[in-house]
Length: 164
Image 1 (cartoon, rainbow, N blue to C red):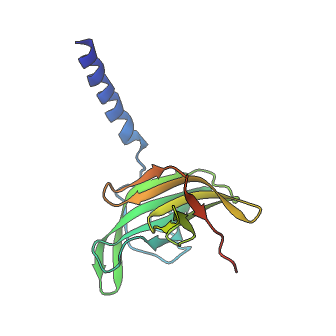
Image 2: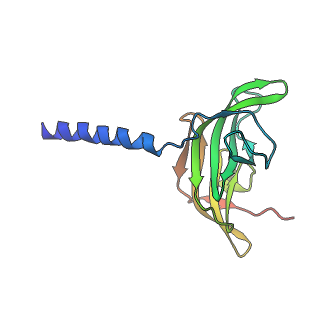
Image 3: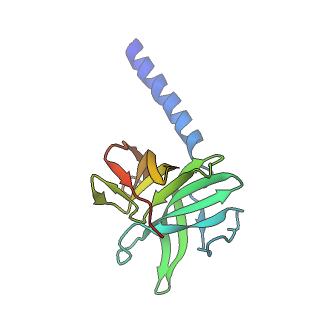
């Protein structure tokens, strides 16, 4: 009896907490803009990458955006496409980095990082720069199935700085 009540109470608490952690930007729909332009909601576009096969609908991407000193990565899905490309994106998940320091990088979609020596366009890495090398601190997979950034272990992830 007590065990059942505890399970019910735990599920109610978990259900109440999880929505509070979701970003206000989840569900936001917008037309693409050029890098360094401001979206209608006041967010600055810092660029992004397509992380799926562009020939298969829907197209998936990761956008890097900022508001003040806060940087975010948006996992997004194309909800309107035509021959000219994506006409509208929808934000499905958000990674938020408050007061993101200049000594760190967010790496994704570029091939700079490999997991177990394999390239993966859905790999997202937070790394610091030390002595001209990346030191991997955190990592995620942009999982289009669950429509979330899923945290993963950093073991086996190596990132290399591109040479000029």
